[in-house]
Length: 139
Image (cartoon, rainbow, N blue to C red):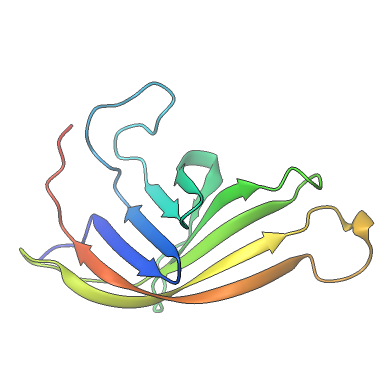
């Protein structure tokens, strides 16, 4: 029994790959280093690979681990970003993938409060399902 190193999740118009211990493979200039957590997000029109300062991995809790990735800078308003939060469940795997269900939240942060009083984030929640697995990675 082991902890998964790859999560393949999908929801409405969304595909997410989560590599908590890195993707493996050759290191590319400007890309994530070996062992660096990586989240891949696709919504049909946007494909984003997120690591480093654009990725936050919360501590493990009894509910799982919350991972938040900045998937888009709006460019319209200073500080405006779109982020994706995914609750990664604790999973134990053996030699085969395990089915999982979880939730994701797409958050739009409007940035500066100069736009007036009010809530700075709006949320779209989504049900996610997929698999968690221990895959062989090359270095």
